[in-house]
Image 1: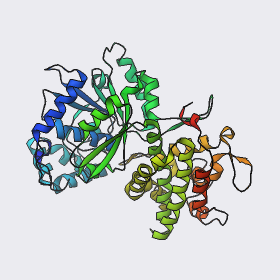
Image 2: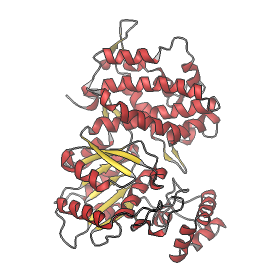
Image 3: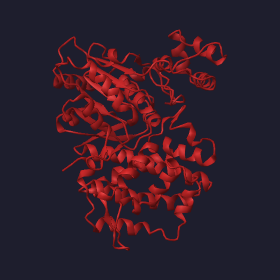
Image 4: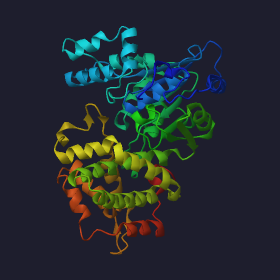
Length: 463
């Protein structure tokens, strides 16, 4: 957001373009009518979870529609009590003072002094406190607009019209089960937009994947047509800095088309698609291979050749897996590769792989990393490995001509499992896997997927 100014939330953007205020208000009014909102009853949008993408999503809405206070109310919930460490407070102070617009805003709001005191060690800041001033703990270098922050979950969601799930997939079920307790007396059915990329594996009664939207459905029991997934090849900070980006909102036609129009901005194109669960699973799959990409980059001193070899193998495995999950996998190739590409370039999962390989992080630190948030690729490695190891999903090995579990045709996934979950091998094993003389040509794996009937509808809970 370099060069942005205080009026970004109005109609003047940092690139100098003027956004038509009348068009914005018309879009808001149109969506309010679809929801049956009466005059004086604001559209209530609540973000649940304040990681980088969840915070940016709320801030984008606030910048776009926050000026219409009588028509829309935008809030974000995060848990209270998360202290900001001294090093982060010092860095935050540097960021504030490097941005004249941010500095002036804080002084005008009488909020600057607490950041001075925190830098000196005379005060402890908290994540919910700094979020009100536009600072996401996982994205300190990209100041956002000020946000209305709520730390009481019941207060945040009880009357929400739209709830945006910005939680990691590993926390989604627990929080939405709590939310269900607050919605027992509701008459209207809320809309849920999930941003979470991750999956869980379930083995009974048959092996299948559980996605965040499915967790939400089971937790709160609303119709699936009111639950949608939004994802795309995006880095949260770059979207807020107004780099051109696009995303897909997936789900039933009733809401996905109106929401695509409502969420679209000049620098953020939102398409719509009916295939919710498969897109959601693909969003989790690319995180698996991003961790390995980071390891390869660190272990080869950013060798372009080695990274391209890894990319060839990991994409061939992902294509193979999509043939297990989708009846028409070729439709997923573009979105999956685009999302994979940006994650490998700059995503937190690739960063995590790099830090592990360099020895700057270790597995005992867990997969929730200060300043980065949840590394969702770790749990996804375990979930995909467990699922694809099941004998009930066996496929015919093309060379050995015998049934094998699908994971036997995914050597990169197997290696990542041995490194991250079983802890049987070090990060160096990822290079050894690439150099294995018995490793098939990636092209052969793609040909196997394309010429064999591998589609397993039960994996996505479909019959």
